[in-house]
Image (cartoon, rainbow, N blue to C red; front, side, top):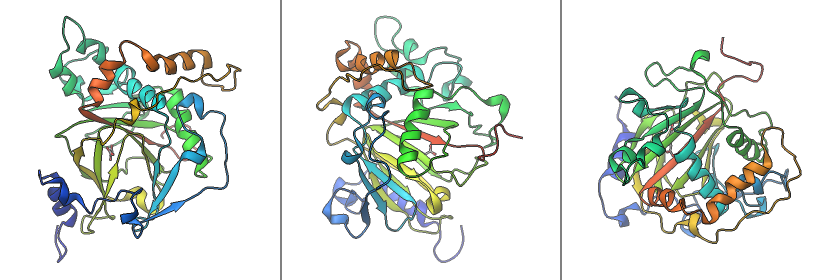
Length: 331
Ligand SMILES: O=C(O)CCC(=O)C(=O)O
């Protein structure tokens, strides 16, 4: 890094990563707080008022969503309160119990090929805490190759249909009617984890937005400019938030320097079952099975295992479209 501004991104990253008292986080944008009215704009979308899939995907009705633009970062959108408590539980459980299963890839594969990481953690009399903490990422759909930073056809798995539908609801609401969820990285953070500054540019399609879902503990998210000389803004991400990186923000440097304890466990607050009538409406989801698996998280005796995990960790699901609209595969 050269020039008079140097690596301002790194400087800010180090500031937040250091174990400084919480009072020094006063610049972290909390979109709901009146202290940040000069930094954020609350926006409403007039287009779509309802989507039949909301309830079964664990989402609140659109009029309960609070949508904000971060003024200094055009294209960066934060949606607060899109998920019901049961919905948060459903997606937390998917990220732990299902997504790390084979044939999906995880960071643990280089050490040992585990068919089912979650099950392996609970084999025997007590939980294997070391193994539980070892999972840092899992990839779905087109698997991101961390060395080459490229996607390829022979490194592609099925993309979970309910997760694709979840993205479609959010994308359509924001006016992106052609978005296709094709690759996901699920990140697992513990209280001392960080994610260093990077841009996401491996996708062929860099115009499609990137959708990022946060669950469990909170995080300070930094977003800067197209290089690291721009001083980044710090935004608080909390459980259930959806961050959308679109337009200019899509290719900006970003990072997670700090995980913070959540003020409340919103996934445990006012949890209610869903009772949607099972009139088949969706091509890709078996609704009866889906509703059962959603409601399992209401009072299932094993739910506490997932709760214990997110009481000490944060999960982030990051979803991208890889191909251009006219492509059905990579050339
Ligand atoms: O955890 C987050 O909020 C960001 C994750 C991220 O930037 C990534 O996976 O590329």
